Length: 117
Image (cartoon, rainbow, N blue to C red; front, side):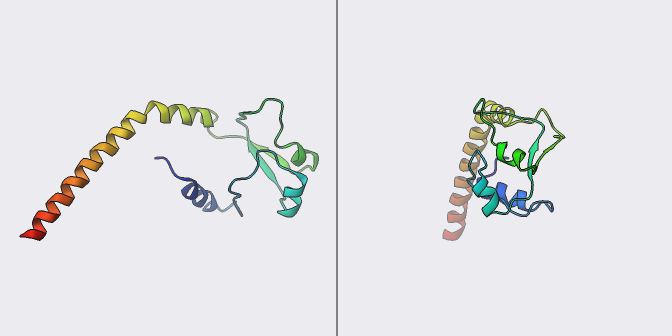
């Protein structure tokens, strides 16, 4: 259920509305970044989580009138709610992986027995 950064990037790039994904982009957009990457629009969902109070990562985009706020279809789905869900289910993930490791070890042992016959 949890994807690594490359899987997330590929998922986002599969969206027909996405032209490019910037891995490791800075929290605050700068004039230089917008100009050098020829960014035409900057979108933000309606669910806003501000990890740094008082700092607007979209100030430059707003001043250039390229900022667009879109209505989120799932307002309850936030970064914090996902983190909370993962933490709550951590034991389930660990147990599932432990059982999978036991099952894989048994399958390997059975394969060795078959190869010896």
